[in-house]
Amino acid sequence: MNAARRSDTDSTGIAIIGAGPYGLSLAAHLKARRLDFRIFGDPMAMWRSRMPKGMRLKSEGFASSLYDPGGILTLARYCADNDLPYADVGLPVPLETFTQYGLEFQRRFVPDVENRTVSDLRSNADGFKLTFEDGGVLSARRVVVAVGIGHFAWLPPMLEGVPPALVTHSSDHHGLEKFADRDVAVIGAGASAVDIAALLQQAGARPTLVARTDQLRFQDPPPPRGQSRPLAARLRWPISGIGNGWKSYLCAELPLVFRAMPEPFRLTVVRTHLGPAPCWFTRDEINGRVALRLGRSVDQIQADQDRLRLSLSGPDGAEELLVDHLIAATGYRADLRRVPFLSPELRGAIAKTAETPILSSRFESSVAGLFFVGALSANTFGPLTRFAFGAGFAAERVTERLARAH
Image (cartoon, rainbow, N blue to C red):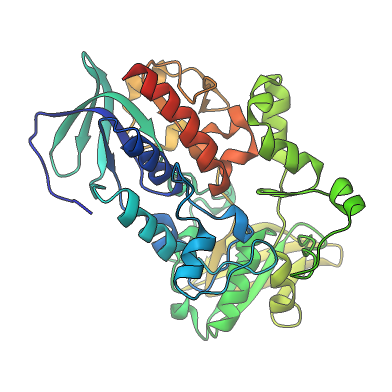
């Protein structure tokens, strides 16, 4: 990784902001086309430092690769080369395996990543001006924002005013050892909530999972490895890279058709499809091991000296829960207002829907030369681009547009 500053008067044809699966996959495609670009960010940072150690990916193995144009370094190939267990379906991918794979992909295909943080992005006469935290300045004719979900962690309004030392988002934690022998409430009913509750228990904490739903709706397990599914089952319930069933399959395979759908339909699908669903393999890790308070609403949260008192209500009436810490596993909400480096003028110039950019079929916003990939593109292309599985589609589409304009 190249973290060295270049001249303050630098310029480039294309600047990529972000070095996760989307940014790295796009950079690999641009490099293969010999286009003039630079990429900025800390490779795989979200996965390396803001997801809990010991977690396993919700996506199946076949849907957990980054994308080079030749399909050379898939996760399957990386695992084979390093004698790591792997299966397309049915064998959960450890976070550490995926992270190391992503870093190997970066070393092989995008060795010139610059580990620098963009502090300001605005339009200028040449296209765009990027200012960095280290004081450097860069002009770019075109910019691709590939920031992932790190800026979009969402906390319920009721947590406003709670001492920050006592409440965190699930993305604030990589190691959970610090919670050993402590009582921790986990709010949420999805994969991240169940993952972190199980990992807290394994780290020696005493977690309690609190959720409004009256039952946790785990993913259906895949068929046993090595056992093929009957044709009728495959037709009735197809497997896709973002989930199972026809709705997920169509979203994964037809993002351009999704883009052509009416806006209210698109926004509803992105908001409601693939709701909270813990991974099938975590069921046994919490049943009988983690205290569950299901069908409960959190009515009030009060600081009680150095602890928190949660007032809950449910079908059996009211109860209180006293904990040392609260972790909100409440997901992410993509929102341009949360992207800290966008200048107010540039943000205001972008045509939006639900505070996300309206994009062309090749991910270009209403500001010519400014592209968005990943979570910020989901309201245009559907749930596919909320997942790493969508990085290949985005890389191909954006590369074709940039190659024509180069």
